[in-house]
Amino acid sequence: MATNGIISLRSRFGVTETIDRLAETAARAGLRVFARIDHAAGARDVGASLRPTELLIFGNPRGGTPLMQDQQLAGIDLPVKALAWEDAEGKVWLSCNDAHWLAERHGLGDASRDAVTAIAAGMEKVIAAAAGMDRS
Image (cartoon, rainbow, N blue to C red; front, side):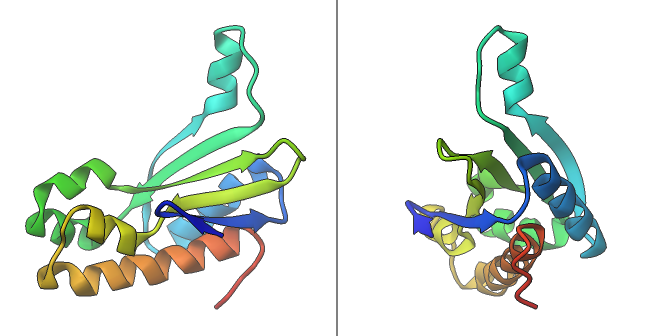
C-alpha cells in the first residue's frame, strides 16, 4: 500500500519484533542504526495511551550524501526511517517514505538518480524482510 509518499507493508510480526528484525536486516546490509524510538512508551510517560508504535532511523552516508550534495535540504528526510505500528484492528504495518517521492519532494536531479534508485531498492528489501515478506 502506498499513500502520500508513504509505503506500508503488512507485517507478520508484532511491532517490537518487526523493528528488531528491521534493525538486524539493516545491520546485515551494512547500514547503521542511529536511533530507535518507542512512541507508545513516550505516551505512557505522559499518562497517555498509544497503540504499539516504534520508529527506527537508519542509513549509510554513501546513500544519503549524494542526495544532500544535489539538494542539501534533502537532509531533513535523512537518514531514512521506518515506522512499525499497530492499527485499530490489531494489524501491524511497517511504513517508510518512498525514495522516489523524496526525490520529487526535494527536486533531486540526475546527480541523485542512481542513489535514489539504490535507496528505493534497498528499502524494499529490508522492509520486506523485516515484515516477513522476503522478496529477495
